[in-house]
Amino acid sequence: MRIVQIVPELRPGRGVEAVAFHLDEEFRRRGIPTETFDLTAAGAGGLLRFRDGVVGRLALDARVVWFSTVGTWRARRRFADRDADTVVICHNDVVLGDVYVNHGNLVGSMRARGHFWLRMVRNPVHLFTWARDGVRYAHGPQQVIVNLTAEEERLLRETYPALRARTVVIGNGVDVERFRPDAALGAATRHALGLAPTDIAVVFVGHEFDRKGLPLLIEAVAELPDRFHLVVVGGTPDMIAAATADCAASGVAGRVHFVGRQPDPRPYLVAGDLFALPSAYEAYPLVVLEALACGLPVVATPVGSVPDLVGDGNGLVVPRSVPAIRDALADLADADRAASAARARETALGHSWPRVADEYLRLVDEILAGRSR
Image 1 (cartoon, rainbow, N blue to C red):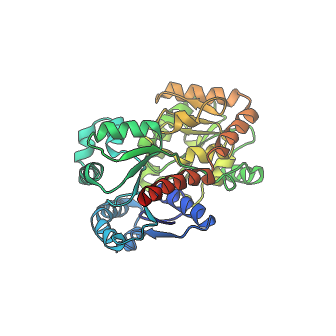
Image 2: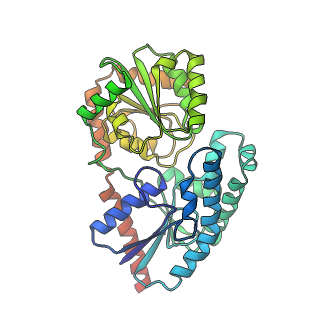
Image 3: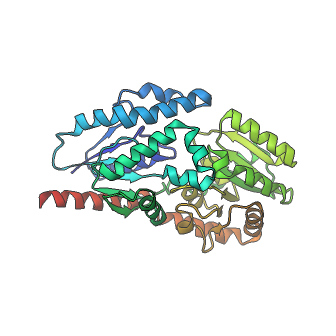
């Protein structure tokens, strides 16, 4: 058995790249030979240098188009004559692979946010992606499509009725050894933020403030007592400047702490009391699992994997409205937070990366067994 993963980058952190990274770690841990085909292999590694501002957004669009076109061509040449015991898992853009992992549905995301056609036509790359995925699902080479939740599987079939490949559901995982409660680190981070022991720190992690609901969360915190503070991890300088102005207008400038992009969100998660993600669309937000693993009760909207992960004592699933978010935060702050933290950690332990890798390896075994018949 040999596994090739196709992904723009293989690196820890969050998003698609982190999923592929952790799977690669688990495969190697089991002694399985692995290979990665990424943007560098596709001849566009230089585009990875640009991540922020207008240039960063243009570079991201260029990465999508390049990896989808030139990347597909180069990957097909490299793996056209692959051995019978090699299975290719594609995570993004390239139209190739025995297994394609559906990390998110662009059309579903745009529809969930409203003004669908406006959002699609104002960014030509959205139209390109829609067309590319139409080709992928109707004519692509994949035998199996992995969806992160049953709802994503349903949405995929609804969006692309010509879909012909078999579909399965395999969720993402979390590094439960790295993401765990840490009282000392949490206390140091709270001190650096100027938080008092009696303050309630609500943590938000995300780089798309509007889609992930930060404006709603700021309004909700503004309607809560002064002991509620909001710690915002992520965002570009321009996004933070705009959100800071919103905080000033809402009268909570002193209670919202912007720390920008961080290489590791863990210090802020372990410093928090609650985690909130009132997003309009998610497929499988890794940060929710990371927050649960750190013992944070979660307030989130019913998107993606959230209904499967949150509830039963580890948090609350709420409508995407200011009153609902506000009331949920107040309720969890007044609940038995030690019990909620224990339940949150228990939930995360059921979604460790070794367990997720086991599910992928069972799928790989099925594909290899089918070839031998």
